[in-house]
Image (tube, rainbow, N blue to C red; front, side, top):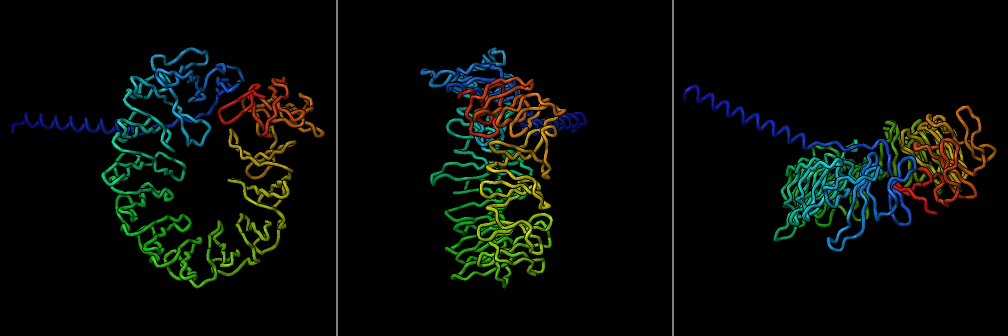
Length: 574
């Protein structure tokens, strides 16, 4: 081979390698997407007389309420899908898309629709960046600016549970997956595709994969594809589920059935043979409980037998395994070593010096790391609190003791709990709520009250009733309206049992004539209550809506004269 030919071959190979590399990069870029976060809500659905329109954040009507439905896919953008009358010829509801000037948008596309998200935990019930359109009986994707993402080639396009930005598509009765960039993740060749419902410790659902199924002569068979669409398990199983409680992308566990028998897989490797009637994962013990020939046992995450399946039942008690056999209970540690103890449960606390145990009579105790008893007073419940305190319960009443067993809060409350992610204790009795800090000092007490955790621009705790409300930070410190709403010009104030509004200097600007008011929200409106009815007021102290509405919620929210019905909808119906 002469040099010229050799260099030509080298050049061709180099071009092929570069082309493959470019394709791989493009594929990787298309695989990843970012779900838009809504920081500012500018538009809301308006409901009037069972018809729907749109209002803006100032309470102005943008679209009159004259449609059967209105979809606002992205509340920060002026794009509104208005559903018109039912067309008998097409057997569909016709739609028109408007902007804030009621100018028609996306007129070159037919039957434009937002994509509903039924499992979204936030307040936006639609995909925020894409829409569907229809042409010649087929559906495609476009973005909010009208750019085509996919051609109209699908019989159906819908959201998939817990995976915003990823879509279930159907062609010729078979299902597949695409993402918001139009990237085909799984081709339409399966009878069904569902999310495995996995999410990581930080709440990220992008690593969630898919359970796929195919129909065979013997019925449906199930397999698994990861989030990239790579088939990890071929569809050969009669049942298949991912153990989502084990949050580890590198070690994905599956409980799989073949011929009616369950086995255990880690990634695509079988670690437990298909010889069990059932396998269940126990989160508290990080262990699998197995059932074979009607008897129960346990294996660890490596598939190693901890207890042979010879027991009538097996369940965990924190650091213990309880094995029931012929009405006797045998106690084992999580490695399968038998323990001689009267306790059926032993659980770690946040403090390494304390463990909470439960005996066979369902009595709770506190022991140290050497099993020396620290607290033993026939309590029916004990929960550790920071600062070496414990919530205890006896005779259906709750209180708090210290590590010496001394009563700190009397056993008189119907319930005591710690408010999520705070240092505040909520104590309830006789329709009264008392809030305490972790120093066991009472912060406030309020009758017929409700506690609400607010996560807005600032996170805080709201305690409110029919006649009063107070704010607290996560440490239990009382916050004023001025602390929380620094940009407001008026603030709610209770004067001699009646509510009005003061300015930043404490000067009364709106007369205290009301039974209750709310502070001004980020849209510039507050609620005012008189004679049991609610209305609204603006930041200038001007009444926007005289008290007219008989609202059930004690702290309603207003935009203009409209009150909030739910996360996305407002109304002025009496």
